[in-house]
Amino acid sequence: MRQVGRCRAHTNIALIKYWGKRNDELFLPMNSSLSLTLDAFYTDTEVVLDSDFTSDTFFLNDVKQDKKETEKITKFLNLFRNEVNMETKACVKSYNHVPTAAGLASSASAFSALAGAMNQASGLNLDPKTLSTYARRGSGSATRSIYGGFVEWYMGEDDLSETSHAIPVDDASWDIGMIVIAVNTGRKKLSSRVGMKQTIATSPFYSSWVETATSDLTKMKDAIKQKDFITLGEITESNGMKMHATMLGAFPPISYWEPDSVKAIQTVKEIRGMGIPCYVTMDAGPNVKVLCKASDMTKIEELLLKEFKREQIIPTTVGEGIKLLSDSEWNY
Ligand code: ADP
Ligand code: DP6
Ligand code: CO
Image: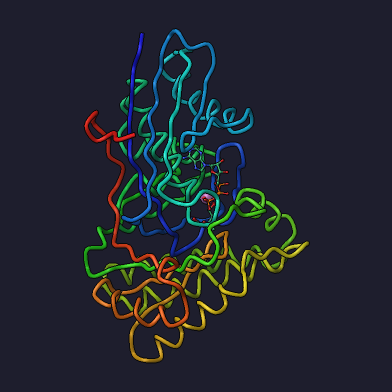
């Protein structure tokens, strides 16, 4: 028996952030979040199930991964295998077209692509909404990468795994763009998973964070409905800063920022002062993302080039949801 699945998933950047779980095992979040899927960054993943394999193996960018990384994949694939009563081992090959573990959401595209590929290989054929609840169990942010455009991750109810899923909110086809200012694309020292757990455990600001993220989300969905870019941007910038403030309140304090992150934020503020609407957000890493109008991207890039190198400025438009890849689309 040999079954194959191949899938591409794009990364997403949260405009209303997820920073903490109410249930670690099930990846149930403390609050609902909302993101923008990006076209420029993605992961392609192949899952081969073969009854001749004696163990799971996992290759990332053609490099065989160690026991710890492979065990994470095994645990994830078991969610599907248990559902179809299958014990067949897998060979997983994944290619990140995004820096890994740098705060550019590689875990989001990774587990969304793996979910899509395993959904096909296992023959489970879950619908996208249910598939998002599976992607979630690999990495919370992966819930949202199942869909394109603006996507909400609804936090769900109580400890019911199946109620916490992604919802496509809007296709973002109204002149939305994002520019990544790559400050440092090396691996972070503190994973998102550990960082958020420490924040919940020790930051006195945590309960206020959850309250404010919840009301920000309501306001943001309204702004999206009205296609009100300024309000969308203002809430994005404010929400991101509040997440980082909450982390700074942890003990020991958590900060993913570097000096050039601050320089990037100041530069964006200056550009905004010139009358071009653009707003920053940052995740668990030093890189800065600029939410802007797609039609302003070239102008903003030129202004950023006065402070940063060409290779540090990566413009992107809105990305689509997951898609299965045919033989001819698998170019590895
Ligand atoms: P990021 O900011 O990139 O999302 P995280 O700390 O959330 O950083 O997640 C990084 C981790 O996600 C990696 O250490 C690895 O375990 C996992 N990961 C990244 N890319 C892949 C991939 N293509 N397939 C499987 N797991 C991946
Ligand atoms: C700051 O989804 O990477 O990017 O669920 O533990 O895998 P795990 O964490 P992850 O956390 C993402 C945190 C964030 C905000 C966001 O994407 O919502
Ligand atoms: Co991540």
